[in-house]
Amino acid sequence: MSMKKIKVLIVDDSALVRQVLTEIFNQDADFEVVGVAQDPYIAREKIKQLNPDVLTLDVEMPRMDGVTFLSNLMRLRPMPVVMISSLTEQGADITLQALELGAIDFVSKPKISVSEGLEEYADEIRTKVKAAASIDVEPISERLARRKTVNEQRQIDPKLSADAVLSKSSKPRNFRTTEKIIAIGASTGGTEAIREVLEMMPADAPGIVISQHIPAAFSTPFAKRMDGVSAMTVYEVEDGQQILPGHVYIAPGSNHLIVERSGARYICRLNDGKPVNRHKPSVDVMFRSVAQNVGPNAIGVLLTGMGDDGARGMLEMKEAGAPTLIQDEKTSVVWGMPGEAAKLGAADDELPLEGIAARLVTLSHS
Image (cartoon, rainbow, N blue to C red; front, side, top):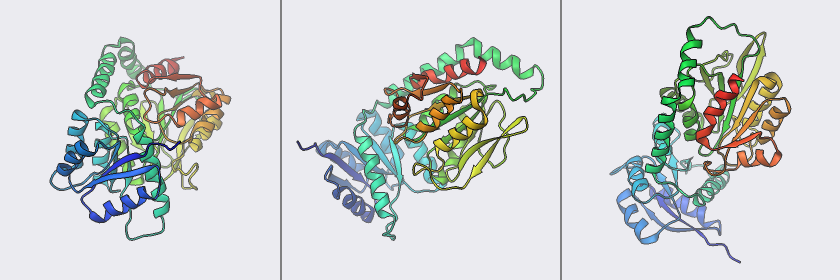
């Protein structure tokens, strides 16, 4: 029985990129490129005519930029979109904005001049577009409404705010090694999932280490964005940084993040080793270091993401006595990583995204 082909519309102002992407999709019988458009105005007409399943969208286009187009699209006709992004700081900012508006995922622009590496790139974009096509995209209004109720709940939760006030001014903390550490891993859909968790964490939460699959150019802007929405202080990790309560440490997109013990303190180490599960930073690497060096004082969390990075590391954390949580299938953009952890029996509990922060607060007080 033949599968229904995934209908792709390619929106890009470069004729060459449109051609390369068309060839990449046409090499795979699962796809049909139903059309191409060089700007959002043409794209709008073609969406009406061709009813594609998924859109690839260049972020930086003349006449109307990708973000403006995307916010209109998500209001009027929500559909799966994979962004084509330049790996620059500006590209990063626009892409993070696009993910906020409801784009599912992003890939870098194809390097036209280089034939080597194109095969791997072709693989990546087809995998991501295939995953995106199967996702039921909720209208932006619904997503924002959900975030709003989450934020309102946060503001009226008296337990958190009282806690935050009291323990801050009490006395200088002595860093006993009972200090808790929260370790979070994520991939596809993770930039928004992490934001939703960090928005709800109180200023005095335990130190949080995060490995999110992200390109090197994107991790600095991502950390800055998270610092802007969270009561905690958010850094992109520097080697040797001490892990303190109230602080969040996001792995750079070019290194593994390893948690080490130094006397009574925990510190972040950056590791430039090989990619693990094809990723660097790898969640498995971080989780294993946390299992070995923090043990039962850690809490492990796996959020939305494609693939299985982090599942085995989470099992190691659980075996070391750490409580472990995964995001549930319903609220995950892609239930790959958390789903694999569930299959391995690595998760103590499975929660909707909006319930994770509250559970972390409970666990960190226990």
